[in-house]
Amino acid sequence: MSDMDLVGEVFSAMREARVLLRREPIRHVSGRGDVLYCECLATVVDSRGSLLQPAQFIRPLERLQLIRAFDRHVLRQAVTLLRASPDVRLGINLSGQSAVVDIAWEAVLQLIERTPEVARRLVVEITETARLDPEQGRRFAQRLRQAGCRVAIDDFGVGYGVETAIGIRTPDIIKIDASFVVAARYGEAHVARLAQLVRLASELAEEVVVEGVEQPEDMTHAQQCGAKWVQGWFVADAFAGAGAEGCQEHGNGEPAWAHRHG
Image 1: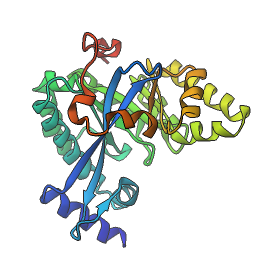
Image 2 (image 1 turned 90 degrees about the horizontal axis):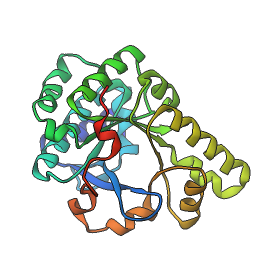
Image 3 (image 1 turned 45 degrees about the vertical axis):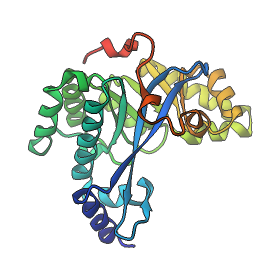
Image 4 (image 1 turned 60 degrees about the horizontal axis):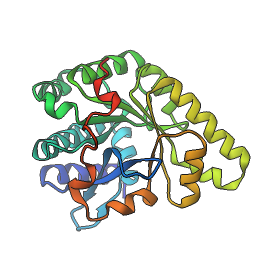
């Protein structure tokens, strides 16, 4: 399917409420059950009823400079979910192309600013697939954080992930790309590389997440490398069928980063 065909399917899905948000929890590395938040992974049901995964349509949207409309749509969906579930924390992905404060984003940003009880439970993950304009990105992140949202850098260590983290300067959360914990299965040199990335990320952000934890060995490596939070199939299984309840706040409902503002 061509880029234009894929984008056409995505925009039809946006108009017809066929964009679905699948939740995946980010859990404490100790396994004690605490959840930092749940990432909303956007999928699209196409006109034939087939499910399109983000890997199929995000880059075409970016290549055609149309990702911003999709990101705004997903953010609005997340806000609706948060309004309906006051004890839930959610995260959404946002392309570096979208991290610009302009008239197209103003209405969405004002919506978030008017609902601080929602904003404080929303994490915006800036992805590595598109280059971020540092000045625009900092302004965008500052606006989100002033509203009460948290800003995360996704896929740190690949693509534009490190560059984006440096451009934002003070992200709240950094997520280590899944490829590094997978590589750690194949020798101590790769484990050392993962540990190095965790240390670097810890210097830039208060919370560090290791993505791609799919088996017990991955969890062990994440623990050894000093990560506090993990995400992946291995820890998501416990939430199968849990719905919103799997993403509720724990303890006093206020992680340390919830009190930080940019």
